[in-house]
Length: 500
Image (cartoon, rainbow, N blue to C red; front, side, top):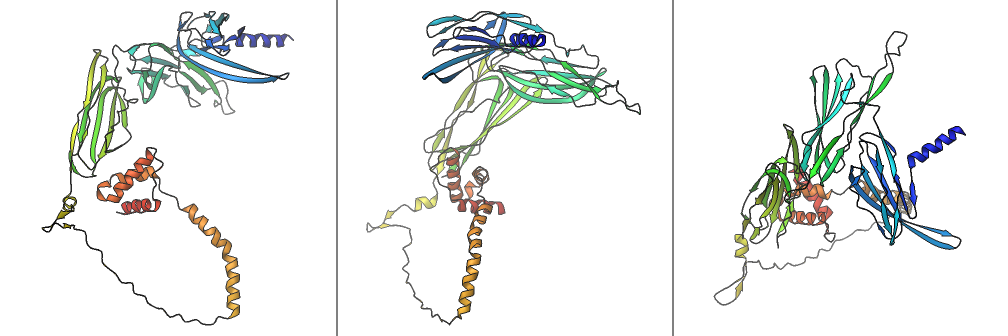
């Protein structure tokens, strides 16, 4: 009974549900390790709920908030009852003991209040920073104050003392970065610094909203040889696990001083292969943006031109780190196909430079494209002769005569037993004949349209039929289900190009 009472009291402590009529408030835990997150959930039961705007909880910043709703129905004593619930979740990272205050929620015109909840923050049992003689885990940022859209680099340093013998692979848990888009920048080669071997793990962060954010610690479990356990030959065996935790990081994200499409310091370069082409031949334009900053989430605006078919490939984005700074390059190509003159319109977007907080415009110039009409097309235009009769260069149809050839067939008598044998063999092979087409259908697989489009695209100028097939494939890729593809013709084209 004494143990049961302890269990019940522990469950009450962990759940810590404070109820009011129509409202309940819960937390993910009432005791957390310093640097870990806590979730406060406020659940309102009713059709129309108004929650408070919670930005701080007892001096701790809310780093994330989201909401959800659910409905349930029950049939009790012949009566149908329904319940609609809305839940708001607030996430924060306490660095000291906090008291979640009472919050007022308005439900269906009535006011309800939650009760305060105590949160206790304890120190981690794992080693923090440099306080382990054998190994340590530290986290640093090259900047702790950035604008929305401005990237920063966070590096986790794992240091292992020279001569320490590991018996198992290190179990690493990366830090958490709520409120940021995270790009894994990979590991830097291990190096020796003093008496330690150091391994770096780097992360590129791009904030999505303003506010004060906390990066939660990284953790590592290190398995070292248990020298207290030896076999009959005096050799150590077994593993003793030790855990180490890094520090947390506070990052302040400021609003942009001016609205912009990108944040960084970039240049733009465009190349076009021709501005005068034959009808239905592609004009290729390539746009490349590069410089300091993050381009992973950038989308170049689409080209939409009347009576012009526009193709584009997937953008190619590359990132690298130089002296702790993030550099990116963005490359995208377009192909324009038309049968009359057209203009590729200009494109422009803004870049906010973090260094001087100034806006800079990146512009893709407009291009006038001239379509040359072929001489054969102009020669085929109908012209009247001197007598006023319209002459055409079309050849007159050739009259052909159908020649009927009578074929004599000699019929020979067939023995009755041959007919019977043919009938029996036919019955035996009938299931095989029925099964054979299915085998053929299973083994013949159609060409993947996406792969065929990539292959045929480079050969559009060689054949009018290939060009028409590329148009159809691109239309289907963009969701036009009405376009029909001749699979046989597609296969013949792909095979012909592969064999050439």
